[in-house]
Image 1 (cartoon, rainbow over the protein chains, first blue to last red):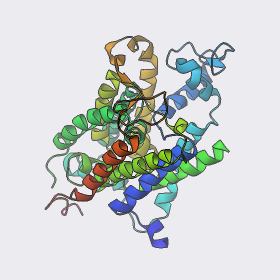
Image 2 (image 1 turned 30 degrees about the vertical axis):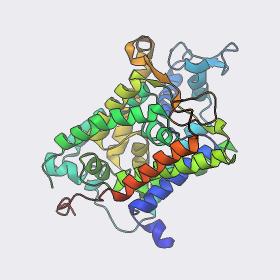
Image 3 (image 1 turned 45 degrees about the vertical axis):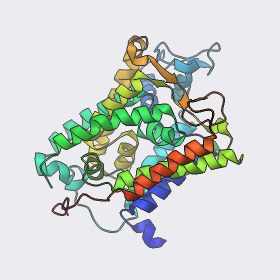
Length: 194
Length: 192
């Protein structure tokens, strides 16, 4: 057991079992996992620091809050409410994920070079070790991933994992769209290295 | 209580994503360029197993189907999925694994999160002008393949028992996970 916790990477079967258990556990105890919405909530929290109009109390709204921004005002001001009350389940869940990644990495034997923590081998083999280029591409990648996730209404966790688990049509549509682009792009962009 | 659950479950989820290699862009990119199916096998098995257990527990009444949350199907799900796929492939992170990787000390993941915050913000600003376009054209609403017992979600195959359909799909996913080769032959040895 101890070795298992300290391993840097689990085998595929134990990985699959634990992934299945955590997705099931969240549904049983609370609700399906979702991550990408919380990027909007953090944006809103920052926006709210600079503007006192972006979220307002509103007794006519279902959530008790409304926003002049149509997206934050969606579904009775659900996002607007979470922006002024960041201590809610979904936001804290994502913050705790950061800590989970931190602990998992602390508890592991073996070392990874500092370089690999910025530039993966598959990248450096083709594009070199300079972090600048990698940062630029990763920034654009982040922009696209979250813009796409918000347009789709969820990301890999919410749509693909939680969705396909419930046999949602949307989960299958999302997975189709994502892999149809991701596979050819990854093959073209990272070809060469064996 | 909900906050305690959020901390415990979030920690566990982050821990698991890191340990299965999902927060490692090398593993993601190698999966997407079809060189290393370790993660693919784990994901397919995870979806299959959780789905099978979910429908069994709903069937015997242990889980209430009000806990389910099915997302709507519209054109933007496919197009948004494709845009996410592009970002996922070039960066090697998706929103959840980017967050975990940042916690695990990856600086490129921090940059991914900054890009993500900007992308989500631009979408927030554009939503008002996008919501009436073809991007939000309905493709079936909040539909599931198997009947969940929650009448908010329409079932595409209502006539057959949900446990048979969902269980069947789940078992197929787990079988695919089992037989998929872990690594393509002759690949990736040089990288080690």
